[in-house]
Image 1 (tube, rainbow, N blue to C red):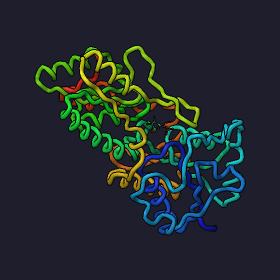
Image 2 (image 1 turned 60 degrees about the vertical axis):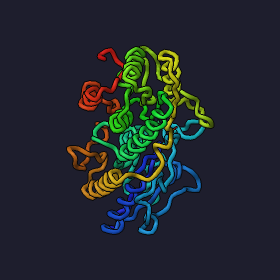
Image 3 (image 1 turned 180 degrees about the horizontal axis):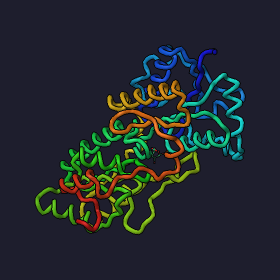
Length: 361
Ligand code: F6P
């Protein structure tokens, strides 16, 4: 039997740690086990385009990338083979023959819910052997306790809260910081607790204005003329839809803009000066934290082990603090892993006097 050969791709939004996974797969698979690993560029685009954009990954290709953000393979969140390109053509049936043509037994798909969903569909409908590796700064993928990228994003958001604290206090202002997270508030909770915020607003707990304004006014009564508010991009006032903003050049309406609304409303209702800062993609770029490097390396290495054991159709996951694998089909289609509104993080936040904007306060 010839050398085992697998393809690897990164799909969806980037997250710090993607390169660490690629490196781990190459180091464990190629250097230790003698595999061949073929990198596909820009999600599955590199496999479907003619000429193909694929290249073999060896030790040299992954030298020095452990600490780098982004992905050496490139990525896209528009690369769905079931609806490919501007005319939305179904080209999924081409993936299995293209992989066979490259001599690859299967595909390691590193991605979030979109990419993992596509991978599971490819496996089910076209027989491609897939192994999923979950990634997202949002930390919302079911089946795994944590995804790499989250720790780096939450640390960056915490640093931003620290910096805003200083200028908020100097100017007696309310500083609102909008963080990412899509429909979940994991980044906001972590940055809010770690940064000692006064108010944290998350999608899981629709908020009202009165408790927020009440907190700011109570602080003013105690001569604390500044406050820091962390708001997740998907947070909403009770009964309202999430705020979205048009993304230039993509035609998409992404979550975003709630920070400015919160600042305006607070300024008007509490008669204070308020400013909004949107952290945006600063949370996604940058070098992965030590935690994310370790987690990504563990997940990449586990992907190799799982393939050696013939465990295709699985997703590597962190369960009870250890890395393992779970059935991919059981993960996709599940609702995102959300912040538990009555869980320990929210209770801790309330215990610290952080207002979450709901009626309980
Ligand atoms: O899923 C990761 C994420 O960064 C979300 O937090 C955010 O809502 C979205 O991606 C932004 O997407 P884009 O990079 O397409 O603007």
